[in-house]
Image (cartoon, rainbow, N blue to C red; front, side, top):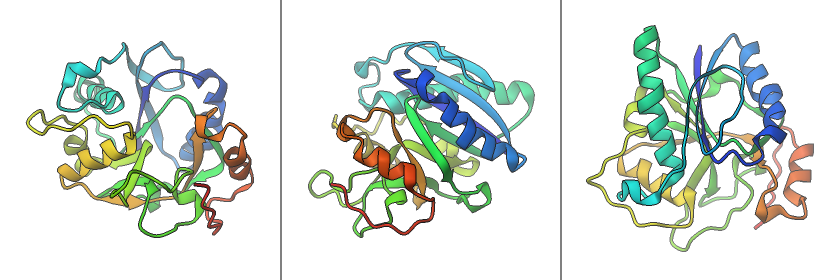
Length: 235
């Protein structure tokens, strides 16, 4: 099983949390006999295991007016300018593409085994969903914009090879209005391409998250097991 990691976003506190990535994500994958290659698209240089290529630049929202979403622009540029050339040069392809942010902290037993991932849909947690789900299936808050009952996580998601070219491409003929919610932007982009989602559990979160200044969610996640059926609406 070949896994491709797209480390895209602002570097922020990456150096503080990267050991949790190694221990709870990379080591778990390696124990399942997976190989890992990492490609980075960040605002500052990062040092990370298994790095095969990197782009260091800032993203101007106006450079791609059709999609004012820097995170997604980074992911698309990473795939087009780093990953595709690397695959062609080395005559390889990856089974899954895992899009993550540098400033994410991971907890013990935070992700399910690779053989449980869906091979036809984007594997992701939810930010908003019509029904209440166990805590590990959502990012931390269940409230969202009005009239948007279903939003998916833009901070960590897994794309199978079957749909990666469609998922990580920018269609300039489709215009999106700028919104403050990354989850709303990503959900709209993927749904405009008729890409479906498969909900997975993930016990991880943004490091020093501004919506968790009292560390309530952080402390809760420290104690959780991946499949623990705790229904806790922290909104």
